[in-house]
Length: 206
Image (tube, rainbow, N blue to C red; front, top):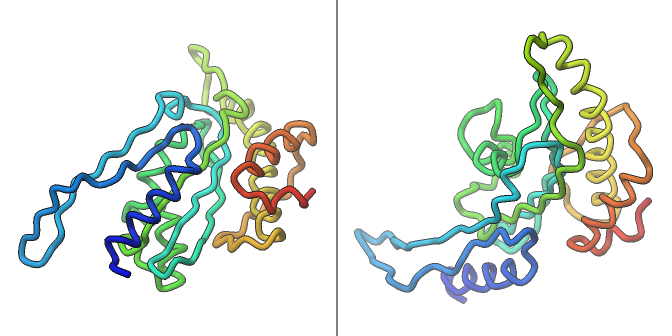
């Protein structure tokens, strides 16, 4: 089976299960070979709603070159600043070459996997679970952090619950989330239900 056919098969599978209409369209078939390199045109589309700032949870689903499925669980809502960005922002950050941002690339590298060699990346996002905190004129950073931190702690706790739940369900989750705070059980139930639609084995987890 050729590498090109494997790639097309992977993309078809992703298009069937994509969420929030984030789509990596099939490459156009105007492939040009230049010096042995395949040059292809790709198209990526996504809804404007994924640009909305706030506190989100998300899971990267990565299909490696050998067909292995790996997951990475994350959230928006900074630890060191009172900002909560959109999951769209994380798409570029997680796969760039800045060591303070590219957690997904580093997790892959820790397993000897080159990101550019993977067959498929899928970002499954849920949110905004909570809106980004309001900013009033004259607010100092300490005041903003006092508003931001309790919400961040709730989402961080659900990030841990999601990562642990997926791992306990048998999925290969690359990262470990450490968090000591609690979450709202009613909100977590809705979040878990949303992700269960994409990870069915999560249904048996609390």
